[in-house]
Amino acid sequence: MAIDRSEIESEDCSLCEDCAKHPALKRFIAAYGVRDTVCGICFRDPDEAPYLSAAPEQFVALSNLVKALIRYEYDEERYNRHFGGDEISGLLSDPNPIIHHEETATHRRSALDSEPYLLRLVSDVYPPYESGVALHAGHSDGLQNTLLTALKSGQSELFREARKRIAQENYYVVEPAVRKVFDAIGRRIDNTVAEGTTFYRARIGTDGRYVTFEALSLNPRVRSRPYQGDLLGAPPPPLARGGRLNRAGVSFLYLASDAETAAAEVRPHPGHQLSVGSFRAVREVRLANFNVDIDAFAGSDEQLDLFSFIVATDNAMSRPIVPEAAGHYSITQLVADVARQRGFDGVVFKSSVGAGQNVCLFDSATFEYVPGSAAVKEVAALRYKFSPVEFLLTPQADDRLIKG
Ligand SMILES: [Zn+2]
Image 1: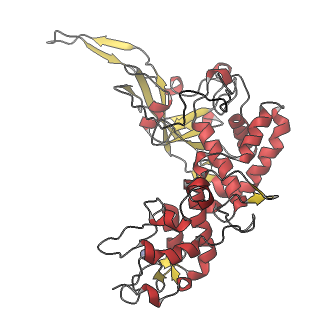
Image 2: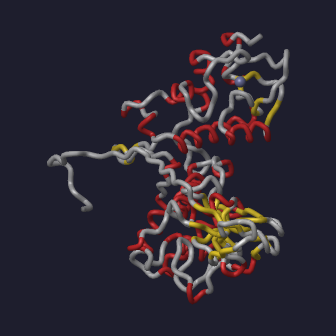
Image 3: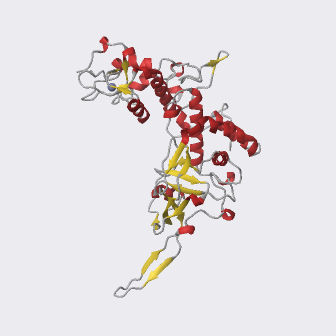
């Protein structure tokens, strides 16, 4: 039996582990859960069957986390009613990745019932920059500020500024600004990898093909031999071309968390043969993880600005470098330099072509080839994924051409 919504104030409600949908919310409730508070979404009676809800005294932190997730997922346009958006509470009672909204056999949920609690969760829309999460860009001097964009798009003022400067100034002039961001982020991107952990590396091509004539068989066997050991490892410094994180002449070891991602990252074509093998950490390794969860940054806009920088860096690292930019010292190379100065052994970032993660080691000796692990694979097919982009067919007078 559920509690009658009219019997209970939204101030006395919380969010339960079942109605939380986003993994970050589930983690929050697991960490700060109590078993005696009514869920403001499903209104189950905890006296009948206890369940975990976020502790009421954690309300501000919970509210900031929910708002941070809204900021991560949605452009302000979607929920700013002055610009044709939905009500914020409406956003969460429609299909969304943050809070469950649909009625099930075990959970009675309705937009009408959950509205008071959802409104309360997002009510503080202009908290102080250092201590809360704002959902609106607001006004300056009577003028509307540019609307906020979804954090997942990776638009970061801090990142944009550093990237702009690196295109015009010597890198060591820009370095202190990036160091300051790193120091503000602190240990929140630390990722320790135990000695013996195995990652993967691929290289296009093989170390030759062998033909074998066998007795009783008319057809000879043809087999490829994979690159192994040093041939599969990082190129020596004089041969190292500039990469996403390393400058030309600097040798970093790029690995991936699984064999498929490692293979996809070398961007082979159908019909290509690849050598894939594994590498093992020879000691404990400290990595800077740019593919990190939002949890530790959800407390304020100040923290979310750091998180945006991390997302922007992750996006930039995962993008292939275009040939015309290969000669430039890039912002991602600068971030890698600062990570190295701060004592990290390498960097973790997402893969844009595989399901796993990429790992880049500043010293290739921190990982060794696992003897006998190499194999040869052939690319059977590639699958491209497209996303819609705004476009026009016939430019009008207002449409200014900015790039040919
Ligand atoms: Zn619930």
